[in-house]
Length: 242
Image (cartoon, helix red, strand yellow):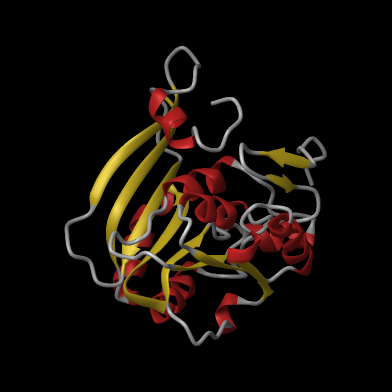
């Protein structure tokens, strides 16, 4: 575990305890929480955060969409406990619930307008020496094909699955989505700096797409090392520095 991680992560409208969950607050989750979108026609939406960790994505979605009701689930008791404490300390506690659950067996009567996940995506066989960290980061615990299939079965008509994945898995993501009956509706390639290759991709997959996939790029740092304007615009409602 990285001992240098902040034990408390402060945003403009809420703070997060960041010391117990194996999956810490990081750029991937924050970008997804700020970027993922609800279907345009939905008002009082049901949202599911799969593998919630500290709860950062669910809290960001709740802040962005005042009519959304968010369910946060995780396979880790530590993560669920920390997420629940973070939710209860936030201004959005009445619209967020937490639950200890394995998405592979997750059952729910309602259907979701948005399912969002920063999933475990490392596929190497050499696992982290920290068992909880390994579970949170390696896709043995939730392989991408199973994530896609389960999400499809839980999405409402016109619902969206939003993910962040390594750019190296783009083709795999498109294939598995197609096999699950999902189609890409939005795609954002994330570049840490101008001139560097893309490292992450933000994806939205629709259960019943209406239009071709909208693609764009996001650069975090410009050539001078300063944060790019588009990155600051995306996160201005969250990061204290912006």
